[in-house]
Length: 264
Image (cartoon, rainbow, N blue to C red; front, top):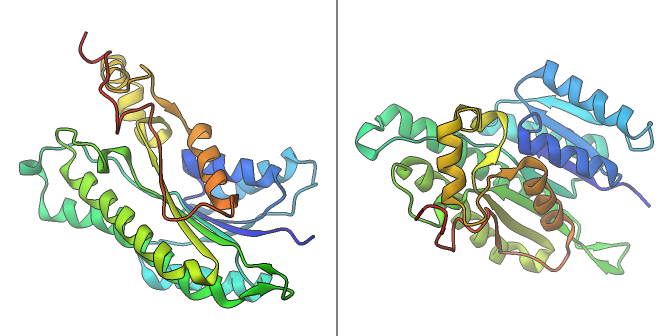
């Protein structure tokens, strides 16, 4: 059986790297995409050694995915090398904690470009490349998939999150529309919506005791998430052939429940 070809954008981040570890152990042919070549090479070496060489060697590509041409180039190269793409994970984002009156035009555009536009570029390229084949050897239906990372703050009003909430809500909208458009061609599109997660990106919050405790109190489970917990949800959405058009919140209840911890 041929290993599925999976592209991870933002592969060197906390959630992206954990997703890569899980998929590598499951035998995927990984294409790791990020800006920093040294970090990509280090991750690829780690993954190869962790499986004792049992998993396919990871391919790496450096790309700035806020540029649509860079995203298109990744898909073109992967398609040329492997003959196609099976799964795509977009694990790219930022955290913007500012009241709307303090968000400059420049910060807004930067936030939208990194979170919304990059997801759009990846999704658009996936919709061009993934559904090319309608059936596997004419028997089983094709199952291709894309998972985009949004955020729990796009589904639940939190103070001073206007910019990032707008950017990540746009990701949900495009994912659900594309899921409807491409379901007849075997392409599934879903989102994962993390709450606060202990990653390097969030370290300016999680490394400060007062800020961390305040964030934990907002989550009904009374704790923040771990990157591997979000990654396992991404893998589920990538591989389960009967899930599409969904937003899976991995947020300790943040987006749907009232926290009793915050009330204390």
